[in-house]
Length: 513
Image 1 (cartoon, rainbow, N blue to C red):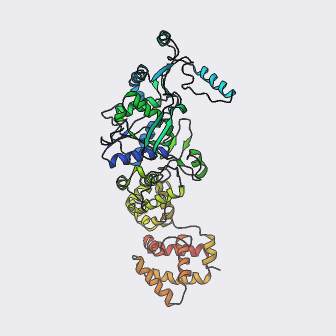
Image 2 (image 1 turned 90 degrees about the vertical axis):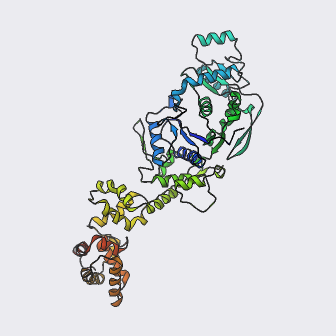
Image 3 (image 1 turned 60 degrees about the vertical axis):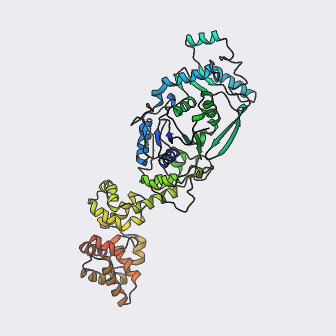
């Protein structure tokens, strides 16, 4: 039984086999929240023992992704720590000793079957309508240290024959396990095979051995990981027993899958490509030249991204949806994580971003959008951009929307929306607009409310339609009859530009039909 009174130490242990999926980011986040809530340690360990699937650049991508998300590590591959190294390929000398320990105490054995021999056994089983399993039914009949004389085993190892060490699964035993999210679980060992723990070919352990040894040596108190590892839990429980580490075995919590928007199946990159949303935190440029979009580059704020992810599988039990990182740390509870998969909703992700965009200071948004303005050839100071953004931020979802929506504040329209022209650019409306022009020319246009009140009094006093005249004015100023508050626009662009835009519209569109 785990000692839950010891210091909380959790780890996020990804494999550098490609871009970090948002499901992995959520796993890291839940580990981080749990650690911070309990005043514990969050460790980043890179599990790179699968040399065939290693992808250059993936480790750096993982580290950069966590930093962008605001998930801070206490120990790991970058900053080191008391249990360094934190990259499994640099710890490979550790694992053989433990694998041999299991052989010596009867919990594991050597197997000398070649890949070709195993493949033939699988094909033979398939031809008989069966599934081949390397388990208790075959391990004493094959080339293993359980079947061969000890002298031959020693001779094979000495001459350099390739071998693996397999776990010797107990026969017909119910393994009793507990999971913080899923409760009590019982599995009979008759359904389990003898997993490979160590391979002489590359002198590296498999995930199962390295994971258990490292978690023990790094004093991990809680293992919070995806549900895809749930089938491995019986083996991991038995490994703790085999090593005599049951007293310090960590508590386990297996997180639900992130599901496709339709709810059927695990969320994949293909879903993102099909429906036009990212499934990775950052842009991923793969070594083969392909790329995949990222939340950062698509304009998502890291706080919004994290808030959205936190609620995919965890329910705070309240109506609150917007959480800062500090609020998440206080509210998070592993026992409130759902067993069922969480359906990803790309529209909800956009909603979260819009909420955070609205609460971000205008000056910060101006800095964020400065490169987009420059890219579009709009020469504007950050101070001026901030003033413009304040007028329209309630209508935006992404930083690029801020530029889209403010562009007309800096560039006089040269074309006018045809539908708006047909509806409002009537001769009667244009005649009244020119009268309003004189009102505006006599106004200072420095206070939106005061200017709007003057215009309103003039319109009502003459018995005109406020809607008709204001929409015609907006068309002349903005190029379309919809947009932000028209008098805020007029004050922003100033009196000279206001009059110039009215005159330009009249020159382009004429006096109306």
